[in-house]
Length: 321
Image (cartoon, rainbow, N blue to C red; front, side, top):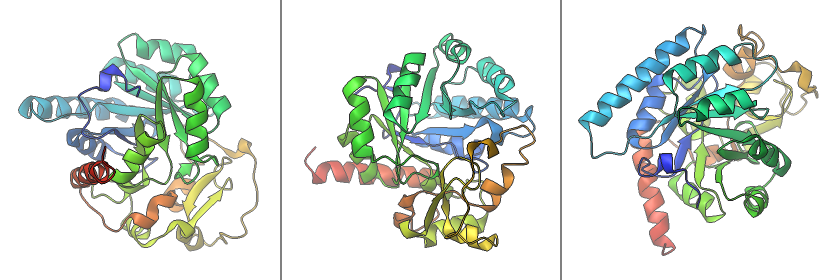
């Protein structure tokens, strides 16, 4: 396995709570970290941009105090997701704020991070993980100098790829001995162990944490996740220009026919600071992965992590690991 040394001894289970656009907030991230998994949020969730500084201050101070008061508990580092896209006119300002606070992990999406981003994070000992959906994308980001790749596979929520994890993780592992993180249709501790079994170092789970008390999601969104199954996930590029997975019920509730959505091109994607083009895609049309079928309740994030730890241990015992 290739877990970065900076993470050794800091995780209850090998898991990252993936950054959820609009949904992830400091409360969710802090509870994930205090429970012993990496919590993450998109920088763009902090609006206006100046709010990012306040969020990072709150997260750092709270986790430091919790760690001091609970020296025997693993307190995981946190991560900030940066959208590396031409329309994200906040990127460099957000990165400067992250560098100021020495954010432990930066997760980049859509395009490999430029050298100045990687170098600035490495300058204080931080890590850079990058989302990919193909082997080619993985190799490009590895060549750029990232510390690990996040294989976003078939069944993942939000912007997701189409490859099976059995194919993509193995292809990457054949050429790369660094950190591989797996995303796609996972929601239990059993799934975390399964991700390790096929060659990943960490699991990357998002949809399951939408159905938590701390998540900044409408109650209807959380309820729909609990009530849905894998058959209720629609994979389409219609809403952002890049293919993603969404809850069929939210599409129907917005007056659209989920079975007859037109194709669009990537030029529709926009991450400008006003967020006007993204709000409908994520606030009204709700992202979720195929793992919804095993989500049956809404819990505090800490309780969820502790339950996943027990599932993880039980799965290991069941197969004699």
